[in-house]
Amino acid sequence: MLKIENLQASIDDKSILKGLNLEVKAGEVHAIMGPNGAGKSTLANIIAGKEDYEVTAGTIELNGEDISELAPEERAHNGVFLSFQYPVEIPGVSVTNFIKTAINETRKAKGLEDMPAKDMLKMIREKSELLEIDRKFLSRSLNEGFSGGEKKRNEIFQMAMLEPKLAILDETDSGLDIDALRIVANGVNKLKSKDNAVIVITHYQRLLDYIVPDFVHVLYDGKIVKSGDASLALELEAKGYDWIKKELV
Ligand code: ADP
Ligand code: MG
Ligand code: MG
Image (cartoon, rainbow, N blue to C red):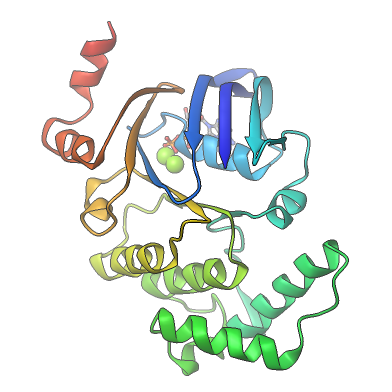
């Protein structure tokens, strides 16, 4: 699904990613953990194609195709989803209407007609039932006055509707309460399939109490320095990151 080799990237001449390797296969859930400032969000943004970064070396392949030169929209159309891509408040545009537009734009980019309204409604009904999202929420204005939990619910709903091949959830907000974490975790657990892959980026182990990842990676100073199974997250919770620093020297 995703193969990253020797990725090096900088911003304003400051080197941030320093030779990062990562391989994610279909059906897998990967967690990326690491201390603040290690480069986790940078990695997510670069995979999604945000243009603030300069990629100085390395390759990013999605299903065997080099996506490094593609614009963010093209990557999205190829099935890459990054959470928090649409954090803006849009008064007058409902959660449902926003996602309908996003889906039809993706279809248009692939040369397809708009999804028939009947099919769209059916999909909205199925996905909202799966995620236990009520109808009132779907008719609210996008992000307007949303709580942390509601923002997460909206993101997970977007992810469910867009059916990405590769979903990247960057849980940057340290202020997320347990309810919000549960919403994210339930969503990931319900949406994972043998055909898609999920990368969950988190600073905190507690999200992984609810999502059991197949692999856990530690991103430290621009590189993945350690990989393991879910037990690695518990070890990090217990011991912090300092022991990894010591292992490296
Ligand atoms: P993490 O998500 O692991 O906390 P980030 O990827 O956000 O780390 O940041 C990695 C490093 O890059 C940090 O030192 C941060 O200050 C720097 N950085 C990230 N984005 C920018 C930016 N837009 N401008 C300048 N420096 C940045
Ligand atoms: Mg940070
Ligand atoms: Mg971050």
